[in-house]
Amino acid sequence: MTALRFPPDFLWGAATSAYQIEGAPLADGAGPSIWHRFTHTPGRVTNGETGDVACDHYHRYAEDVALMHELRLDAYRFSISWSRILPEGTGCVNERGLDFYRRLVDALLENGIKPMATLYHWDLPVALDDRGGWLNRDIAGWFAEYASVVFRALDDRIHLWTTLNEPWVVMDGGYLHGVLAPGHRNLFEAPIATHNLLRAHGLAVSSYRAIGGKHPIGVVVNLEPKYPASQNEDDLAANARADAYMNRQYLDPLFRGSYPEELPEMFGEAWPDFPAQDFEDIRQPLDFIGINYYSRGVTKADPAGGVERAAKVRQGHAIHTEMSWEVFPQGLTDVLVWFRDRYGKLPVYITENGAAFYDPPVAIDGEVNDPLRIHYLGQHIGAMAEAMRRGVDVRGYFVWSLLDNFEWSHGFSKRFGIVHVDFATLKRTPKASARFYREVIRKGGV
Image (cartoon, rainbow, N blue to C red; front, side, top):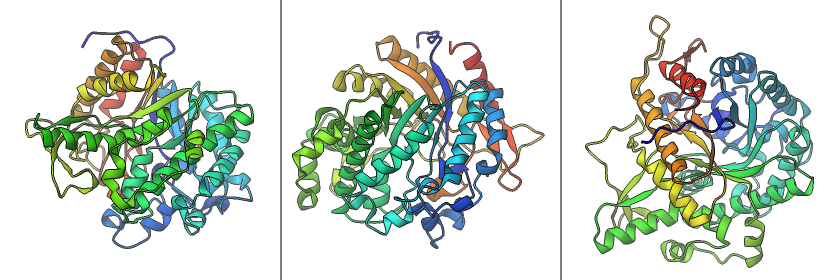
């Protein structure tokens, strides 16, 4: 990779999400979220673990902001818990919930750290799930109501806004395969959930502009570039279906006003007819796109491979993370260039990039050495620099994650953090990768 000194205003940050780190999910008047209910349902999460305590960031946020300052972070991406703000999902505002985020944002600004707030990182209020959740068309209006409350409370102090985090994961894990909250397995529900997520995003952006929002607003998608296992016709077609399902299913409506042509055939009778007006609501002008990148997918045809009729081919020669994801930095370059070529020269933030590797449950002599994570981060920062050299307008990079945290249905078994958390004592210990990242930031990312 060609060495590149990043622009002086490039944002170097780290990312987290509310349910994964905050703990205290019912504190100070908050209502339960679907993840609170999901984790308290036997058999859903590894070792029966929950986010009841997580990293206790709700009470230790000042300590965590001090860590960010020590790491020289320019920015911090966090998510806001919908059910802390509106315990019933709509209606009465819980000011004590808003106060937590006011305190957090004030602490960030006092330390010279720019806040990037995500409105939805998977923790839907139970009260709305009981009314159909993402299957109810009314949810687009409910989300816009919630978004407006947060915008009015915090817009004077937020540097960047994002509406949704990874809507594909919400649909695929929550409504099709049932491995994530709310735990449904229904082919007919999946496209409805996707469509209502996109409608909610669009109405939230419209509401932000209607109230005179002052800062850039976008959405975060997880992209996984697809590479055919061979050049035979079946594998090429399977690769196109996999790409349509995971990547273009969200980007095409946002930027082109329609779903990929492959989807109706893939879903068959489960594919609905959507009103044309919906795409006008979805296709709101965006100030930037947030891209989460972890790995690629090498794809072969497989008649038993779900709606895509495709399967991933594991690359035996490669390094794989604890999530069994191949380490493939070139995929970040490729997907950034692909996005620019297909959807235009929109500013981009890498809103998540990182890896789970084995780290001991406790720091050894106050140290946690993680050379594989250092290698991963260095290679991917280089891949991002290569995309910038090719003309992609990348404005910032957020490592996933600041802290080891509650990794959804995996519980505490996977560690993504650059800061180690001893889950017995909640002690924070910066890993070697945190020191590496601090030097990247100090040197301007050469």
